[in-house]
Image (tube, rainbow, N blue to C red; front, side, top):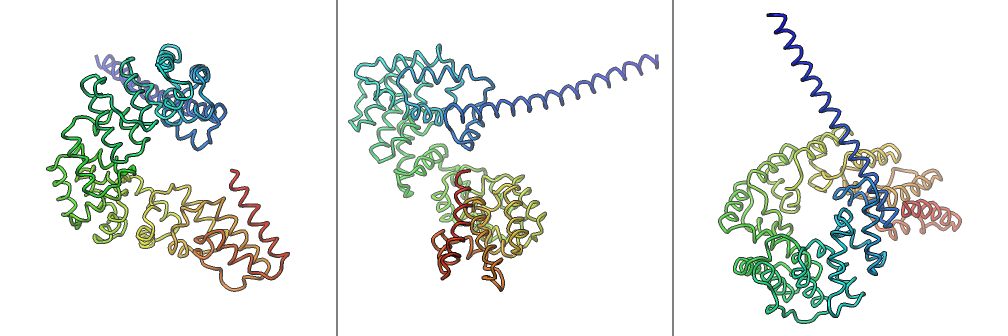
Length: 445
């Protein structure tokens, strides 16, 4: 009996081990396939649509494919309807999911219907679809027709009077409310995004009117994207919920005016739960900031609320690992809060360049943490190479100029300060050559 139990136990343990191995293998395989698909997607977007690598990488986070048959069919279909390469690129940039749709069964019928609509020229048709590619995600000829007519009228700056033609319900509400926003001065691009999206702010009547009134009273400019962001937030929150959120901020040392100032800078600041706001407050205190310093920091930069605890911890570890003290890290946050958001690679690369290659101390970086936002190729390397050339010629004999005087100024000021001021024309030409050669190389990358 004992032998039987032992065998069963061993068999169970073996099954668990096999399951763990299979799970680990599956995870690795899935990750490998995902990377392969992302690499293929980036390559395809760069080679077929002329996207920059940076843009292609951004899009590959939204859509991934590992073969070109379907994307090729989609691009061919657009070309057959008269879309230019530039228009196709804009469409895919705005709505990359179209590359995953079936060209014949999904996209072709919609394009055929819209192209055949009475009075639509090819140029008008391609302009409308390029302006609002998400239109192609809508279903039903009647719905497509109503959206298309409305968009065409807005583009042509005609009056939008379709109320007698509209189907009852959500679509009528959306077009009526989008028309009201148009009259307030909301830009076309923002209008169309609201029209074709599934978001709620342009649905209903009373709630919409009440929300718009509140946003206008807070002083938001309808011509800006912040107006639409604020409308989203206000529409979603009841008065009671807003009061509860304000009370949380008050408990942390803010006053009500502070909360609304933060809202105007970044409307999403009111979307976060009281727990999230309190948690962020405590995390920033652990970075070495006092209560009143955290209040000042968040008042100036409410976007900090969206930074995860993990990112902040990683940032602290990165800076401390490079030799900065906790006090210096806190000082940098106060001087330039967004330095928390830079990747470990960026922070290491730029710190090592300034300290090891240029011999500036860590205190120089602490005094001007904005250096982490400067481009290595376009600003830091060209300017620092000029400074090194001046040092090698004995033209800078004492201590190095400050990081701020070298990197914070414009190109024009830098050249006047360190290049054109010299009387030796050959030297000026040589320094300009150093600056321009590296600068142009950086721009091409």
